[in-house]
Length: 139
Image 1 (cartoon, helix red, strand yellow):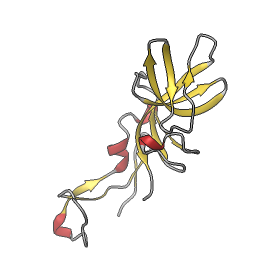
Image 2: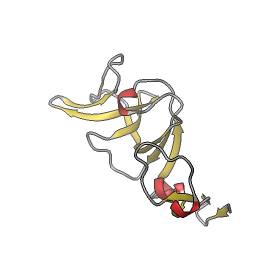
Image 3: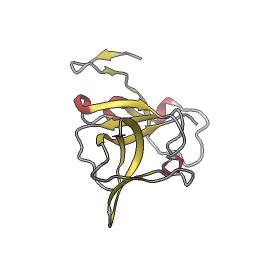
């Protein structure tokens, strides 16, 4: 295993990638099943200069498979669209929610019925800090 520094500051750590998908288990990863090496930075990060990671706290996004303690891969360069999960700052507080368009305007919607929707009005101090592209969580 070799760690390699890249010019953009990311470290490369290519790890083995199995050549076949695993439907319900894989007893032991034998070398003959390894197809190539995979660097998760290359797989998860399309634009390193615009990407950051953030850890989730809370459970308002469970329906989107985003759990407390998960790490989100966020791209600041993407324009947020309705349907995207975004990192937003609302009235000085950060949150992760799904951006939705309704007949009355935009809102930030949780993916847990225990939480309320956040309507975005002209009076709301609101800014999107990036679009969530990936969720990394332990099983």
